[in-house]
Length: 361
Image (cartoon, rainbow, N blue to C red; front, side):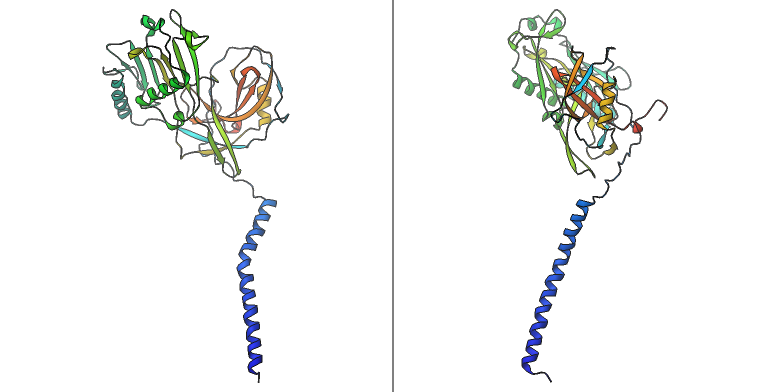
């Protein structure tokens, strides 16, 4: 029969080893988690396949350009080669106004703020014209896309030709955004995006670039969307995607401001904006950047800003979303090739297998 001393020693050993076992058991989940992380780093799972939930996409429609010889391209990036870019990208469907009557009434109320108090004239199923009975102001509005074309006939306003008091660049951008905001068409990504400002001079019936603001009768403001920081599911990489336009440094959202006050202050405004449905998107496979480069050098793609040079050096290659001035069903990515002297070209980035052809619907 064990003595009390022996019982005490045995109890201490049981308690000691019990504590050790509890510590070991508590450490097991953390150790397993570390082992699992190390395994995943060494053996990463394949990324999920692109969702392609919209099926085949319509091809991007670039503006028609005059037939010219394809430049000879040279690639001289910082790395000396084409960059490593994701092979998957998000695609966004474009929203349209579903209630024509509500949208027409909304714009009718807005137009009255600018003196267009007459009832709008219906031009076709989707477009209406607003006029100002006391000033040469004309505005055409598309109730489906929300597109706006606003014009003031400045050619009959003699005060404009002798007025050179146009706003400076910062004030012009602020005024252009204010005009669109009062029109009810200033989404957050345009309010927070970049802008481009140029000065224009009046001739008999046209605007031409001015040498300086002191010789300008107008200032044109082009507004661009803010960049999107895209985290591609399954890729583990965040890509900053800017928006590029057919004009390169011009935008389908622009306002031209004169130096006079009153009705002739805003002489032109265009608003062609594809509304992104932020919570709705799909991922699509991309053609490789190497194949996009081959396409460009073979005469494909679209040159947004051409130079007089027959030999073009490409310095920077990125991905961006293409912003069209025409109605588009989806916001799609493009490869952007930037070169010397402002050269800029785009190549559609979506894998050709997921682009509609004339026979696939």
